[in-house]
Amino acid sequence: FFERLVSLVLTICGMLVFGFLVGIVTDTISEKVDQLKKGKSAVLECEHTLILNWSNKVIPVIVELCLANESVGGDTIVVLAERDKEEMEQEIFQSITNFRNTKVVVRSGSPILSTDLRKVGAASARAIIVMSQENLEPDESDALALRVTLCLTTMFKLNGHVTVELSDVDNRHLVELVGRRKVEIIVSHDLIGRIMIQCAR
Image 1 (cartoon, rainbow, N blue to C red):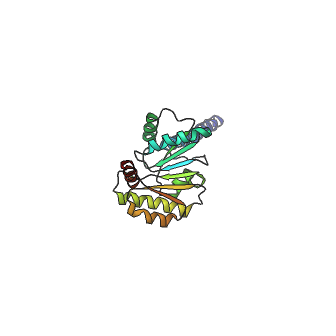
Image 2: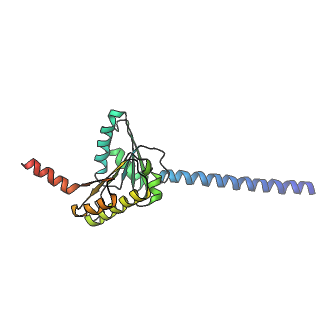
Image 3: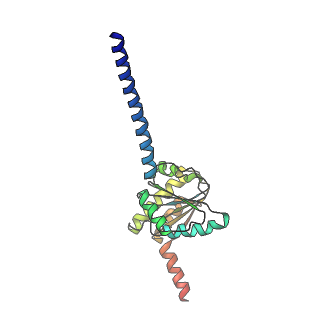
């Protein structure tokens, strides 16, 4: 009787331990899947084009990059913005039907956090494009662009060039001061105004 009791106890303990281990493995796998769905995993690509922030200009920029990359057989574009990953992917893949062999990778995160910038391989990117935030006031949007530029130039040894879009031409000198000679600045409203004047002549 005693031997049967010991065997029963050992069997129950073994089942409990096995169930505990299965639970740990299941939770770990579920956590990893959730991270992939939410865009929290790291990007493995290098020599890619990195787009920071989201605006209605992101889709046209991706289209033009796909056209430019077609001659070299395609490339990789990584987008990092503080939006839901699935929403960004849905908007991109519904708007663009032909990526011309270019792969688009989307990640959710903040461009002013060094951990998120490392996650998208900012240091190894061939080119970085910082988009202005259209849902903010011009000065607020440019302040965010300034913080992103400061984070990129001080925390990383960049391989590629950085292009920053600003909303107000008066803030240009601040970004130039922070970015030194590593950053190219585009003031979209000023550029459009110049083009309109040239067309009117």
